[in-house]
Image 1 (spheres, rainbow, N blue to C red):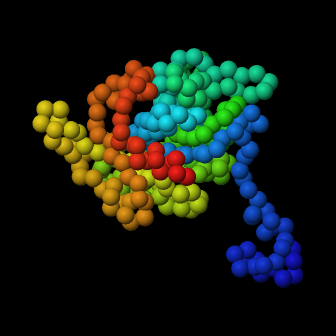
Image 2 (image 1 turned 90 degrees about the horizontal axis):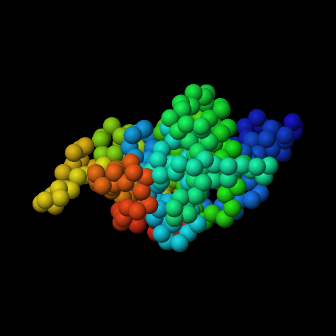
Length: 276
């Protein structure tokens, strides 16, 4: 330790081993066979708001723009991405690494359900093992060329989100919410975590925002009035999107045909990602 050290690295200008250790990056390198240009994490403060749905739709949207797209399913204990895309085959691997499964339109997917013998087998793992698995999806999977990778995060601000932000070079996050006022507080937690990790918020998506009557066209706010504009304005987030309750979209996910569903609600957000 230097004689000039003040024991406060924020104000001290001395060079010492403890200061060098604090500046060490925890970022992991992707597999040597991977060239990933942009990483977008899709997060939510709580479960059940449609985070995996938004992840799927954003990947489909960017693929339709002719970008090489991938999904890293970091929601280890609740993987639903393979179901939305109708993936039944298992991921394979050899001495080189693990190979993701491609969807019908060429979106590369890696999810724990693609490695389990039965997709309904429970994953009863502790946090460190789950976080380590997510890290391996980044370091051991041969993703090849990817323009935009979307990371489907588990809800909350626990072990896995922290591992992703520290281990993977995330270029921005998309926050998914629902109209209930309680969720507003939880969204703010996600925004504050993103700021703490120095990751920009690219936009907020409010799922189940309203239901549009097919007969008269009137919009009904079944889960309460929207608060998305208030939150976005408070934190200076310029891009927002609202997804309606759509039985056809739900049916497409259940049938594994989300790639066939047309939805323009996220086009503005896709444009913002392209401008990164």
